[in-house]
Image 1: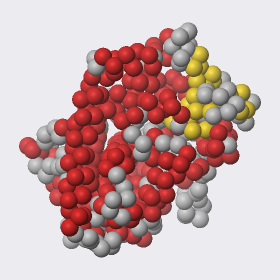
Image 2: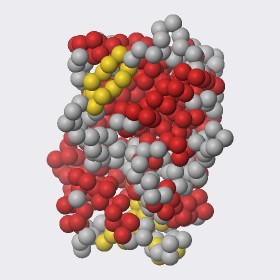
Image 3: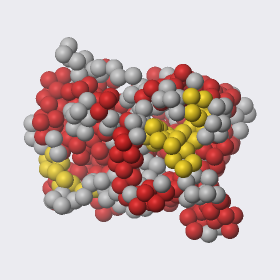
Length: 468
């Protein structure tokens, strides 16, 4: 089985989708002797519902997951049981605050006005090619750093001559590569490399030191500020999530390690998932003119432009855009930012598909494959059709989370789902209203082999100023 995986690694997501279809949606993988690469792979929605909801207590992250993702520390994505519940409860309080939602909108608007729109204006005037994926990664990294840390690293400039690499952001990319590397290399091998500090693990160690040092500086300066000043909870001008966490629990009640682990988890979620979805969204829309026209028609009909001719909409206005919401959901169905998830069985179990699971068995469910199954989405499952998300009454159709799994399901469902949609809609509206994007002729768009579904070669486009 392993040679089949390795031979198809450049096209791994489509290959596994074919394998799952051939085996009826669930497949038991057996690796070579001594490699300890044995797991169950599924795309069956009922199996996923069982794992994530019905029998949630029997499926945790497990020690192997914690080792692979040790970069995330004891944060919400890498913890189980009481630690996970504590993380989730405290973050849930912050995500529900109106001040948090308002800050997310203000930060998004500010980065669009001051950086992304001026850059795209320059590209349209000069006729230069831009990599939208790179711009989205820089934009979302600046935004999430501002929201979580109260610090803008300025990865995205407002002038095309000022693009530069930021060590902190580059370190994040390398850490992401390491996480995927640990998924495909036998545990004993990457553990040895880590102990000897060679190969990919050497790069990982250096990157983690950069990230840890940067976050330590942010947390130390935050502690110094808060020891002398206590800002009001609803003060948007001074809001950031680390500060809000300390104020929620009280100074001295939360240690620096908890703040660091929380920050890394939030930065990883806020940067990669949104930038990946936006990249695939703009590629799909630019290659489907009918969809683009319908989105523009909806914006024109339901929203008003401001003096700068782009749309700074409130949440109430964003909720009116039913077709745009459907187009984003359709993008997430076909190209989920996190293409696979895995859990570990605590006790033996029998899945709804009839497959037996032993204790400590790793179970992977492919989000990528789940969005491409005819049994769930019909014979047109490979087509980009936002209409499948809009009812005859003109409202969005709700699909159960265990079928539309982009934001996970059950008790571990994504806390930032509504915030993610707000950010993506604000950016989509501003860019589609002002610009038309055309993929450069001959540019190859395909998924990267990574834990996040980026585009392997970026998204190279020509930009034209739109007049409506």
